[in-house]
Image 1: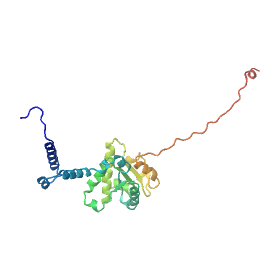
Image 2: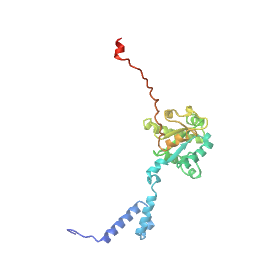
Image 3: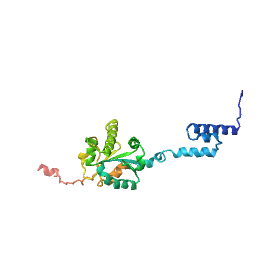
Image 4: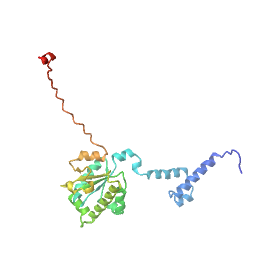
Length: 238
């Protein structure tokens, strides 16, 4: 039993720290059983820790950049398949990371709902609702195809979020395509700003950048100066 002040050799402290680091990494599954049984150097520990760092999402590296050029999810109906491709290309060239609900080969191997939920449940992701005549039919009609069912599922999730937010819209952006008009916009989005592509390109970009267009106040007309002669007091008494 030791009493008083005891000096612990530095090499014992280093050994203890190394052992604790190995235990933590092994318990978290970063170091495999085979690596646990072998002699692991400080260099290999640094390598594993660097792997943990690289697993962090890109948005945590530069929060400012994620706001300016963040993720954008685009939901649309099948009648806009040819219109969406150049629209996505335009957004990509502006520095955004758009994703659409048309599933390419890598995504086909994933669960579709989980893939959508990764965008829909991320509050930092802006969602563009591509409005077309078929979009209204997909979300309100009784007969829809497979893509229409996905569109209806996304619409239901968006509407639920809108209700949970106290009927406030923070990230859903309706955009009119083709010959669509305001009447094709879902009723719960009627009170928000509706953009038309490509007419409102500049305003839409400002919305995606979370900026506002500066509208200078109107310049008032110059006041009219009227000069009226005032009669002298003597003339007034005569």
